[in-house]
Length: 243
Image (cartoon, rainbow, N blue to C red; front, side, top):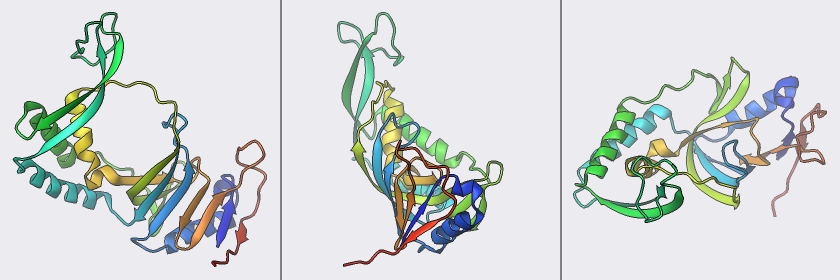
């Protein structure tokens, strides 16, 4: 079944809103959710197709990440290679502050490998642990069902407790150059492979083409200009026949 809606339906059409909430809440816990044509606000024009798994809680992601970190900290053979942006001078010297200046004005990338006993690795692991032991608080949204929440302050609908499974970049964005320190880059590389690094939530009023979950497809109705058609008043339901 394909359900087509406009962003205005989320606020102006009670029947459409409840239909969307029910479809998401009734979808299988631990099932997959695919989002096509997603364009994030900070993606610099990037368009991606992403697959998530429903049903990972934030506290549980933190707990499992700490368990994984303990194993990583004990791994004497640990070795991680990173590639990061840097600012250099005309002689190729890297600015230790990671900032552009009159002297350090050449942008470049460097690839570095760090072993388990290196100071950079030890500092990065310590920062990962500090973040997991003091996790940032999450907003206290109100649950409307299995995996769907509302921010009552803004009346925004969210699908939460998602685990990133895969991401395919359909259209590359116009990414600006970004320099970062070795510890910061290494910390990010470690966290990306942890459950906490794959935890996501998704706004239903975000910029995307379609969500597929539980045998259903939720599609945003667009006008000729590509912008959401605000005049839509009802939910369109299309039955699809599988071959």
